[in-house]
Length: 512
Image (cartoon, rainbow, N blue to C red; front, side, top):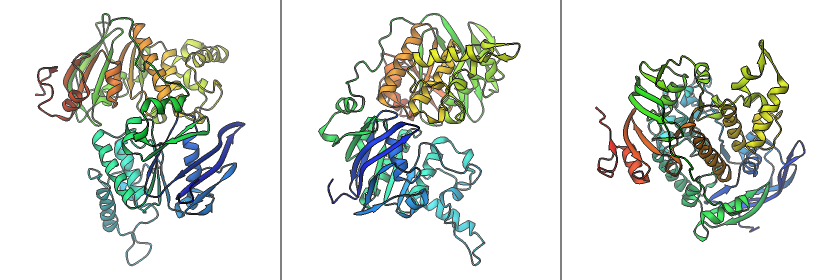
């Protein structure tokens, strides 16, 4: 290790219940650099960052900060050392305002110390949001009412508000639009100039290559190596991460789409979307692309019965259906993999078995009595089939890595034998190897005549998997592309409202 390094981590080890999460990680970074940490789910990235943040304690090893040995014994101690962390799981207090969350512990007071200077607090919160480039957020708003992307911005503003020496960003871009991501990158570059060390964790390798000065790869709790982006390639980095090159990221399809399965006609919900019409065939993967707030997720939730449209109709196999609740959708073999698995896709305090078997309890029940033995047999077979690790069905879901949690959420619907599967950001927070597994699983499902709606913010994912692509903007479908017509530039231009996009190359839909 270079003695000029601002942060040095030496021989850090950590185990949980006999499982070695970190096996002696060595890591070093300089002040004023962006150091990316990458690896598969379960490689040890988040564990290492939580140790630096004082959230958990290592079993052994040492941390040296600015030449001095330190041991962050708690998040508060790490805070005093100048370490700020933005986790994948938001730490905001939902019922408080944006102002209160950003200025937690440092609210300005008036003449009397017990009297909060609310106008001053709101001005300060607004200044902080503007200073990091996030200007579209109402500082008076209750945090729970914000979109997921705006909550992420508040988390980042909160972390930057107290002038960190080290800023840890764990999957910060997972819920951000391209425009918001550009603002985040501008903030990171400014922090570099202020000599802040930014530790950047992401599964999106294109981002890592754009923003990082160095990249360290972890695998199975060990340091594989550190590389400079301009001196390596994505394929070489992937090989370091998974131990082998990944060929054929997107599956080759064996079958063409069949007869029409789903038809949506003039579906509307004021404030969310209006006059949405489209169809999905058996065995078709229909991609829906759009910026955050375009209405994609609201449409998906209405088709699943989680929200109610005010007008329009939904047909399955040519028959009009009324979906008053998700229970009606499950009976109709319609499934929704939600964009936020931890909030509304999984019960984090329950076991893998309970989560995977959640939508099929009627199949293993008699006279309202659940046959646990039969349920466990079905779940165990599905866990083995999908390579969920570790393959322990009694293990709590919250103890699994993000990629394995996503597999559990997907396994629930595969066990339910859904014939229409709506996938909302199916690979968010998932490592490269697990992404490829999910992509091939999606292809296999389509080949068995399952109709699939794929909602994603990742253009390569949309382009690599979809038979057709719809583009949404401001609650309307504004373009439709065949696989041959679709390209990154044309989809982005359509989604952002640029008038010069590939004129005549796709069907433009009248937005009047």
